[in-house]
Length: 307
Ligand SMILES: Cc1cc2nc3c(=O)[nH]c(=O)nc-3n(C[C@H](O)[C@H](O)[C@H](O)COP(=O)(O)OP(=O)(O)OC[C@H]3O[C@@H](n4cnc5c(N)ncnc54)[C@H](O)[C@@H]3O)c2cc1C
Image 1 (cartoon, helix red, strand yellow):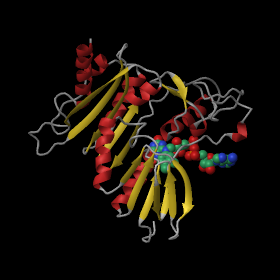
Image 2 (cartoon, rainbow, N blue to C red; image 1 turned 90 degrees about the vertical axis):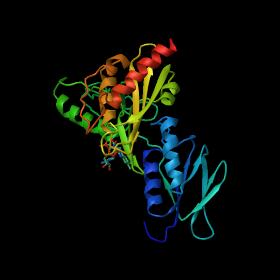
Image 3 (cartoon, rainbow, N blue to C red; image 1 turned 30 degrees about the vertical axis):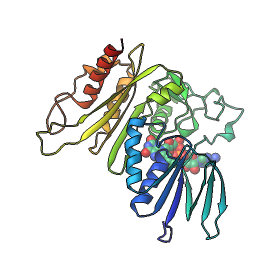
Image 4 (cartoon, helix red, strand yellow; image 1 turned 180 degrees about the vertical axis):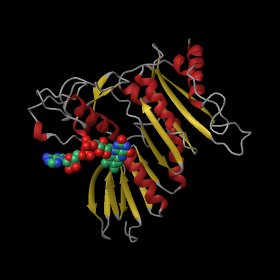
């Protein structure tokens, strides 16, 4: 962005808005980040994690304008833009929108079955309701394993696998889609963050009765020359003890942990299965009990304490 841009308003504190706000702030722009939710990255992470991220935004002089909805834009007298919310106004040289996504499927309306938002419904072989017509990617629904229901979650990870499935299944039912956990990751202010499945808020918004276990420990023993904490959350079904989601945050790159829990969700494992899973120990890389296993052990202990 040109050097004469000094003030930026970013609207939407999801992954894209958060990354844009972070990058503008580290290049010295005065940033305001607006979102209707009460925290940043609300759909991916619980408050225990987003509280720390918000502290990092504030340390980098980003104004967090949360729990407010943008209602309009106007040209400002100085040639910039004035963004109005239901709680105030923010002036900047530019405003960036990182809000919402819709499937671009008008062309197929009335011809194939869709969700109300226009996402095309497919079966596990990527066939639409119209014979010999297949669909994949952001245009389609995905089967979301944590809820065992079709959902709209546009991610490249889904699009790539669905595209491969169309090719495999174009001449018959050869390989079924294994669904998604919407596993994702982001790096902000040196924090590596990753998430898979549901967090407590997103589970409860879907009517699920869950427990969220929070665990924090160093990723490797403190007799090593350096180590740093990993903050983990594990979301599990109170009744069945099935693992439904997890999230991780650290200054060390622990992002692959979300992929581990993604497999646990896909294979319908319980907190008890995950607590006893075989993960390696080598002090360069991990504690004797890896932080994923330790978080699951803590969940088993939480379950006992709650009964
Ligand atoms: C800023 C940003 C960051 C992202 N980061 C990630 C990430 O880190 N990880 C992740 O998993 N996902 C990420 N995503 C989501 C990811 O980009 C999408 O899920 C993925 O690109 C979907 O692939 P697709 O092929 O379905 O659609 P697209 O990549 O959108 O491709 C569709 C193509 O079809 C063309 N097209 C549309 N209509 C027509 C028409 N009528 N005729 C001809 N051509 C047409 C379009 O021009 C486009 O080229 C990100 C998205 C954004 C916007």
